[in-house]
Image 1: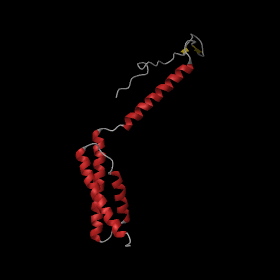
Image 2: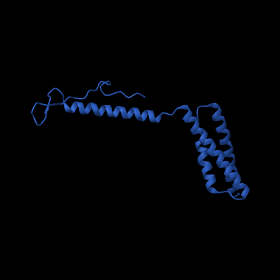
Image 3: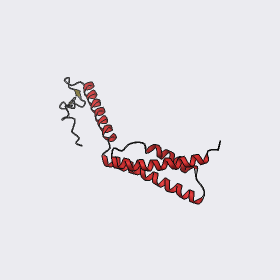
Image 4: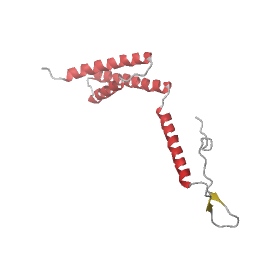
Length: 141
């Protein structure tokens, strides 16, 4: 990103001060209006802020892929934790809650077909494990 000075953007600073020889104070030049210069500077600041906010909101393909891969890895780690808890004979409610939250995060699409297929398979496995655990915890009618 290239940042251009205000002069190149069409906004010029007002030359509002002129020094008289031998004077101790300053005088304002009557051709420039201080309100106009302040308003132009404020508008430039808002425009620049909007541009920066827009750039921060954009993410490139590698960042998006990394974020979705991280979601899949988190789900797989939680499934491993659940497997260990099942083998130990205890199932933590916290693990089930975290799996539910993770499953909701796996619904969003990454835009890459291969990655979406893998995340769908992980999401299906999470949904099956949650269904088994909630069916086992529900009282029989």
